[in-house]
Structures are given as C-alpha cells and as structure tokens.
Image 1 (tube, one colour):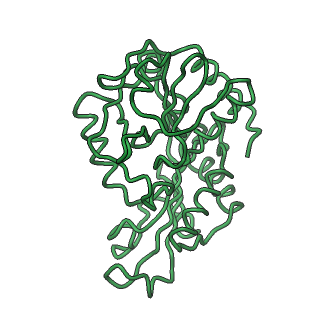
Image 2: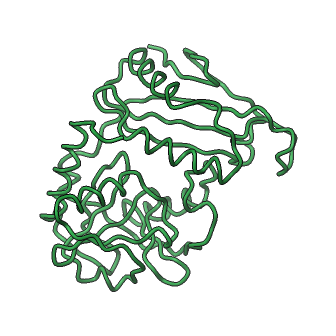
Length: 286
C-alpha cells in the first residue's frame, strides 16, 4: 500500500517531494514535532502545537496551518495508511528561497505531515533499562535553540552516534558549568528517598511534553518534585533513574557511565509509568 502524506495542505499518495532549494534541506532552517498516536488519536497534541508555536515565534517562522487542520490530517492519515498505533511527524521550514542565510524572499513556508507505524520498546528492554554515556560535548545553557525542536540537529546526531558506538542507548550531557542537562532526545529524572529530581529548564534542556506530564502526574499523586541545577554527584547514590520522551514514554535507566548503577525498574518509576499509561488510556489531557 502506498503511503499517504500531507505536503503544504495537499494529500499525496506515493513519492511526496519538496524543493531541493528548501531551507530545511539546505540550512536546517525549520521546526518539527514528533507526536505519538494511540488508538488513532494524537496524544497531547495541544502541548506539542504550543511548543511548536513558541519555536515559530522565536525563529520568525510562520505556521501555515491551525490545530484543526493537523487534527483532521492525522485522522485522515490514520485511515488512509491503516495505522492505529503510530507516530506523526509535523515539520515546517522557511521554504525555498535565495541562497545565503538571509530570510528575505522566503515568503512561502513548507510544511509536511507524515504518519508511520511505531512499536515502543519491549517489556524486556524496559526491565533491562537504558544505558547512558556521559557526552564529551558540553551544552551552552543559554543557546537559543535549546528550547526549540529544530531541524538543525547535527550536534545531536554526532552525540548519539558516539554514545551508540560506546555501547550506550543514549547520552547524558552536562552544561558548560557541569550541571546535568539532558540526553539527545530524552529528559533526565532520578529518585532519591522517594523524591523525584530533574534538571530545571535553565539547564539547557528541551521543555519536553512527556517531561511536563510526568512532573504533573508526580505532584498530583503526592510525589515531591525538585527541579534545579544538579551536578553528577547527585545521581551517584540515586535509588532509581529514568528518561522520558514522547515515544519512549518512561524508560528506566540501568547505568550512567561510571556514575550510576541501578536495578530497573524502580518502584517510583513503575508507579509513574502506571499513571502515564492511565493518562494515555483516558486521553483526558490537552
């Protein structure tokens, strides 16, 4: 069956294309969101679109669609592509324009929406847990792209490639000052004495949609959450660790290179995973 996608609002079946001069291709001048789909419905779509809007405002990129169009588009792609459990990728770029870095003349932005099947990691992998390698590349916590899901992601590609070559699943990056920041595509959490810890937004992290949902679920269920600037010594004696993103959901961590060794999944991780699964089942949060 040929895949249906959306390009600039048009439904296309088969080999959809964008211009070779599109700045998303030539300069990484664009934004994106990865949206999980459960039971044919996008999860936390409103929050993903809010983050995309914030990124668009910060980069002066116009969003040539509204939330209703995206909601209907995902529903149509689920039907056309026969997908119940999948991942939608919404991408918007500054479009084709004159060569160079200036934005003058880039008046027609490009946007695409795709939907592909996705199977989350197995129960066996969750019992095994993720291994994290500490990245040699430090993060500038004041960099303007930290809070943006940008298509300019070569630094992330290089960091993850190095982590995978070392046998790890993901990385753990530190700020220039030595504070724990995030992984390539995950936010970091750990538990000590039944309190939940995570780096604050001013540690150069992406404001993860799943991260925020987990913080809210923890607070709603009596788990104290501490957000701040923490050095790696803080996780050395942690009781348990996990990472989050929209596709992994809540993934236990078994080790952080020479810093943390655990036996996943821990009791708080399991409890939060149950709350998160109930949230997915209820689809009662926007």
